[in-house]
Length: 312
Image 1 (cartoon, rainbow, N blue to C red):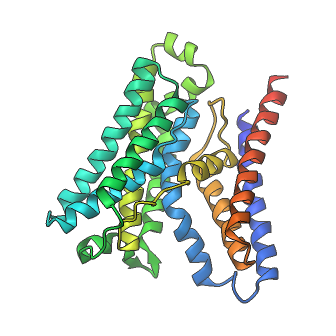
Image 2 (cartoon, helix red, strand yellow):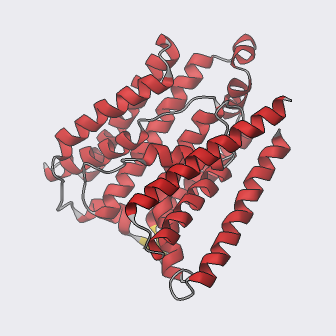
């Protein structure tokens, strides 16, 4: 199974390379430029940060549909506090604490009460999206430079969200690979009952996973709001489905027990690459949604086929 996962990640990397070469030949003046390639990575940086948390949850055999709403809540709450005159550090900390609270809310009802993750996170998505509308309204602008700097500053001509993404990818790659604590998620996803009997506190681990996923969504919301220079109530809509698609493409399984942080990045990059090519090809917005939906169906179908073959 490990070798199969490695093949999936490697295959996705090769596919991305081939699509990039094809796009360079089809759009030689637009696609293979530094600005366009950086824009692709910049666009996927926010969703990659969310995908890191989703990957950990899916390794444990569960998922979170509320991450897009949490992203919007943290960004909107930070923006609202800033225009009310609160210092930037306080606004950011409170926004991240709100994300943590949503993650704990999900984790408590799923891990302790036993509510199905689909039902719980779907309900939370609606509740939090309503809170976002209350906080952001028609939008919040005129944010202070100290906050905008977080998402718009550059180092070596590369915008800061990319550096945040790379740092988090490295940290969680090392944690999943070398930390005993994070390795437990593989055991839980592989066989939850056996993990419980071996002494792993499955309920606590799942709760921590939902808290971590929400926190990363909160970080993504802060970065996105800072990068845009405004909070928009529609931020994060559809993020959860794109992130789940990216994570499955990157080697995670709906049944749990497998996944790598590199796969989360490659899956997000693949989605961003396809979106960029569709824009260059002037594909209508309706067809873009259809194509991305078909990619999700194909990714899930591919995962089911692989699991069935592995079972046989």
